[in-house]
Amino acid sequence: MTPASGPDIMNLMNDIPENSGPRYRLGQSDTWLSPIGLGTWQFSQGQGMVGKFWPRLAPALMMSIVEEALRHGINWFDTAEVYGKGKSEEALADALEAFGASPENALIATKWWPVMRSAGNLSRTIDERLRRLHGRRITLYQIHQPYSRSSISQQMEAMARLIDAGHIQHAGVSNFSAAQMTEAHRALKSHGHALVSNQVRYHLLDRRIEDNGLLSKAEELGISIIAYSPLAQGILTGKFHEPGTSVSGMRRMDPHFRPSALKGSEPLIAALKAMAGKYHVTPGQVALNWLITTPGDRVFAIPGATRVSQAAQNGGAMGWRLSESDRDALSAVSREVLKSRSR
Image (cartoon, rainbow, N blue to C red; front, side, top):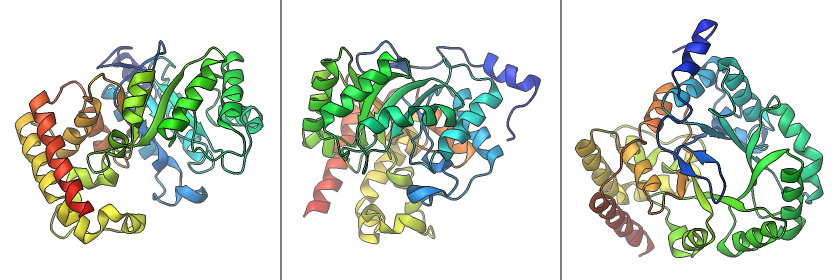
């Protein structure tokens, strides 16, 4: 597929109603997002300390991935300063600009990298974020890690100033513990704003946020969870359990990809495949739907895509729901797999 051009651009955007597909409320805000967003770490172009995880993607391919996401009802995109030192933000903005995507149809979440920085850096670098994004509105700005030189209270004060100045619409955090998230919530609230989200690792093979109190605390405070790596870097699609499939690159350092771990997760993959057959979808779509049907509709998922077909499959995880009994059955299999790993 090639990216739209000329009159086709307007046709594309006309084909996407402003409220196409399901929408969940972001925290306690007045912003509504598709339960699936598109993660764009893979748009890093091999740049920066984390960008080398992915191969360089051709600009036309990145545009087509964004186009396909829009076509399938995805209305927001997650990026970050650290993804290719801004290359991901630029690639995303290039694609949205090419399609003439309106801010209402294509919302942007990005993140500030706090390591070895203080809260004052938030205001000093916001113009760079906006420049990389070609001036497009930042719907959600997130603290990427809880490792700033400044206190959480100071960071939230800086975020509040960005909201008040109109530079960003909402503030969130990422990789914060339940206690850190609660502190951020209280600090931001003292400035008249709500913390809307916490972006954390969450999927059927990593359910720590259910056990450490983070998920329940987020529900109590009205904070949305944004699940990154929702397919466990592709494991939950089942492709790494197919005969002859090899594990390469940085995946070899992930404990989930060890031969013993892949063997141990076979019962879960079998259950996902069975559910996929029942609902006429793919195993990956079942795994994503398990996340976004978390009671309360407070969990979003941001799978990435390096192929156009993956963007389409991500969007296809919306618009239907696992039954409560099927979701519970998957949860039980997942728990058994996780329990066997801890023995």
